[in-house]
Image 1 (cartoon, rainbow, N blue to C red):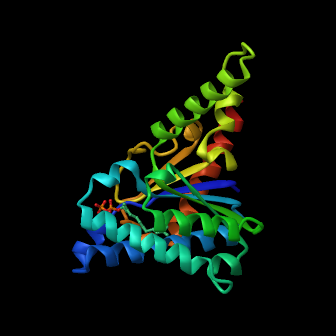
Image 2: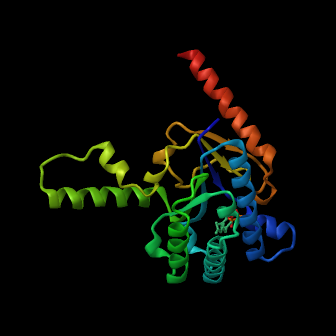
Length: 233
Ligand code: FPP
């Protein structure tokens, strides 16, 4: 089985348009689709799940849309903090990854509260990338390395391990599978560092149309690809 599966949740607005829903209703339904995928992953024995919820570029959307997504996230993070929430039911630890300084205070507070309340959950690690881009993550890690080396003044050069230790995603192993919906085949600045050897699975289904069989099919293809690689060695 793969140990780390990620989702690029694309197509919420298209789904909302297609079904004559408000945009925010599309995003809210997208949140529930994510919870279903996470529970399926849990049942399959996958230990790490990462979802791309909001990129730094998404801040360039209309201010009303940005605000409604931020409000939605705050509301959902707060709901997940409850003892009877799905993350506590499945013992899911939630990590919110990205440049959290870019979030409004209420979303940042809710994210920090959720991370600290679930820190001892051990069933699965769910990383939600918010205010995230891979290039921002890499710049941030390199800056941190330079600052620390400057203070230590030990004359050592920066190693791969130095950078990896300072990544937002340091908490999880590299990805096995990236699943992207809506027929797009790009990574869109998502986990570029951590996907060097990942299997990419793209489906034409919109995010809200994703079902368990998409996940199972992606896992099956990943396993076939692993097997073929082993045979070649
Ligand atoms: C991509 O579809 C989706 C987003 C940019 C927002 C996703 C946010 C959520 C699902 C809410 C998540 C909340 C929590 C707490 C995880 P799109 O808007 O780019 O749709 P399009 O491709 O049809 O334009």
